Amino acid sequence: MILRELVLPDGFDPMSPSFIIRDITTGLFGLYMSYLKALN
Picture (cartoon, rainbow, N blue to C red):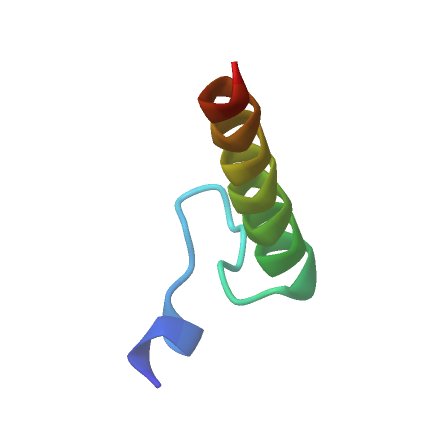
């Protein structure tokens, strides 16, 4: 995969587990906040 070869300017690998976990956490948090706003 080309993405696996991609490295951001700061040397951070987008395919690294920590990046993926942070991305998922951010996504879930966003969904949760949207859910709370929908309830009110």
